Image (cartoon, rainbow, N blue to C red; front, side, top):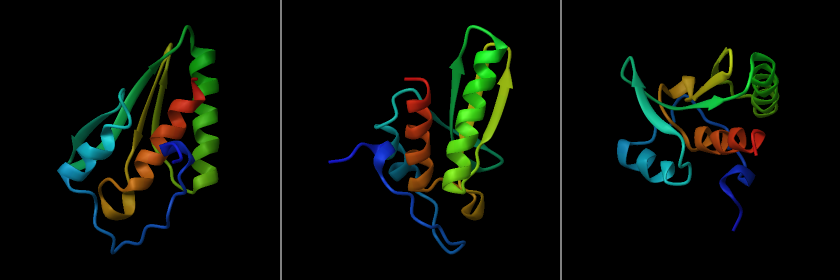
Length: 112
């Protein structure tokens, strides 16, 4: 069985349904340091990463950006001194899709 990060993202149409709260919570079990947050009625997947300085946070941000470009799926990334916060959700469906969890797992691999 492959890890979550090794799974393939599937194209998501605007007609796809976002994951339910229960489905999202079940997926979250694979991502121990992430949390589901709700903003403007939309469930999103978020995690903050700590670094020793701004330069390290910036390198992390660039690497996550490269992962996002490869997948054609883009998070919100806030980069500060010693900290980057990454938030994934699927804009086309205004909610969470399995792809968001796959990309969160790939984000975790950046700091391993």
